[in-house]
Image (cartoon, rainbow, N blue to C red; front, side, top):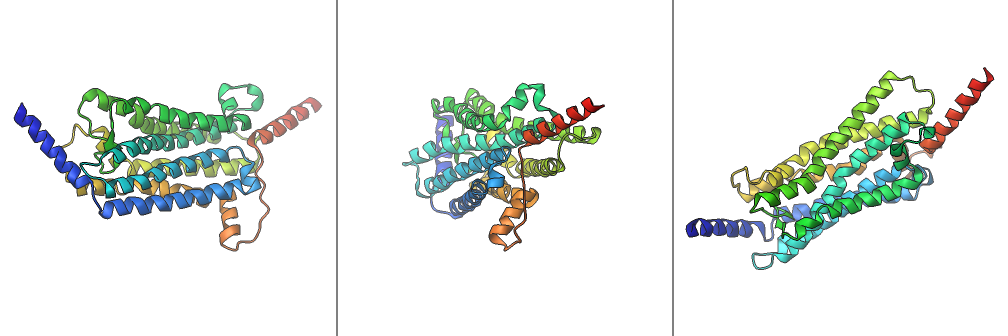
Length: 333
């Protein structure tokens, strides 16, 4: 028993020795995170300083998505410093930043599902229906919903703090440390991993439901402007669901299935998760590329594009207005 324990300790010390110190991976995390932060700050500033983008309440979910990625990569910048300057004798920095890396990852994972749900209920429900779900996505409710989601994503990871669950992640960065007990691993699966899986499933669920609904209904109560915006956002949600399924899955598997896999050299672990940042880096640029109002504004600001007249009205106002017109027309007959 003592020999087995000493062997485990020596293996863990070897793991920590490989984990800490200056290297290519820490530099890569630092530079990738800076790129994501710069991209997200640009996207957020462009949205908030443009009246026709800022006034469309659904765009606030896109802002929240960028804010979540921005915060996540901000803590990865600190993560890079913890790896570079840390050591076996100085592990506390990595433990503290690991909590914020995991919590902000949980926050980011949830936004595609919120955005897809917002589009679904805006398109398929009329305001007079009084649905609880449509009330969650009104202009007055969106900011509180975003704030509550941030709080929930952080709160669900707090219990792991009491069990010293954060530190040197099996993926080679500061996150959730290697777990020594099954209950602790299950707690991690429930908090972070389940949010990732459920968000992917819910995004796909609302995407399929909205696509089916649009194909089976003759939409007459919604403007073509709203329909074009919806189709563009749903293409975006398809992309931001598929990309992290490819790029983030190795990190999720290494963390969630750490007790099932054999020990791997550190360079292999880090090579497997090196694509993790691609998703966060791509999100704001995919939005600019796929959603016309953002693309138009970007061209105006940075590409010398011709100033076009772009009007982005509230979905609810559009639906309410056309619904009233439909009812009034019905009375005439």
